[in-house]
Structures are given as structure tokens and as C-alpha cells.
Image (cartoon, rainbow, N blue to C red; front, top):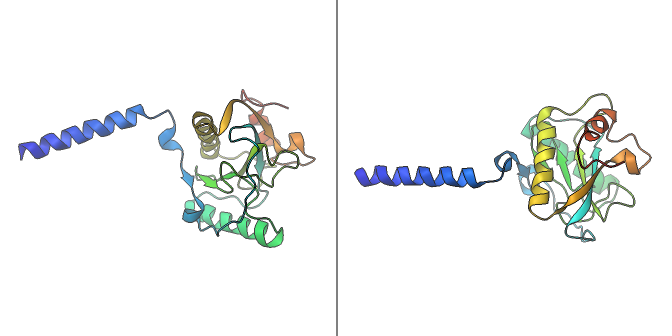
Length: 193
């Protein structure tokens, strides 16, 4: 019985060490893969020009927003259906999408060229907030998810440490991602217009 308690204490101490050794925000970044949100197989094959890109384009989907995992999974399948069936694209246009449930949803992922911003698709990560944000800002959970995603991308070599952050409307003739998002992005250190 004494050895069982000792093993439990050692296991608890090991777990505590592992959690303390993780980078800040690691436990808060939740990426939902296509297999988990119900995605169909994509047939995209064009890679980004560089494994470590230097640009991030922030967009909004201009559709419905979502605040629960079930709602966001449904939004992802709706977006994928529209992009693949109506637009004829190989998958969702964006590399990642963010729900107001505080999760990041994988679209094309880290290394695949997007279909979100003409002239930037093959050199940037396109990250879209799910919803229409012309009249309001995404909630705090969505903003935190974006910060954690960007941190993770830099720490893991997907994004250059001196990357440029831009709103979709900064490089395209569009209102996306909406003024409320642009107002927040302008306060971030990597923002460039």
C-alpha cells in the first residue's frame, strides 16, 4: 500500500513538472482538426512558398458566428460545403478559423496555400474569425485563441518571429474583417498597414 501511494506522489510530481515546463498559453490553445469537426477529405496540393511564412491575414467569414463546439463544428461543415461545392475550391479558403468558443479550427492547415486573399494566398496564413464582425468585435475567448495560435506558430517555426499582421481590407478591396477587428489589430505589435 505504501509503494502505491509513493508511485501516485511521484506521478503527480512528474505531471506538475511537465505542466510547469510547457510554454505560456500552451494548454489554452485548442486546435480542432478536420477529423474532429466533421470535415471531408480535401484535395489541395499547393504548398506555401515558404515553410516559415512572414505574413498573417486576418479575415472574417461574414456568415454566422458560433459560441459552442457543436455550433462551430456545424459552421465549419457549412463553410467547407460552400467553398468546395459552390466555389469549386479544393477546401476551405482559410488556413485556420476561430470560433467564439475559444477554439481554433483547422482549415487548410500550416503549409497549404489558401484561397483567401489575392496576391497573398501562397505567402501568408489566412486566419478567419467565424461570423460577421462589421458591427461588433469577436468575444475575448476568440481573441485569446488568435494570440495563442500566433504564439504557437512562431514558437514552432510556422511563422517568422518578425511576421507582419494585416487585416484583409488592408490588402484587398473589402470591408473584411470589419472595423471592430481592425481597431483591435492596430494595437498589436506586428500589425502593419
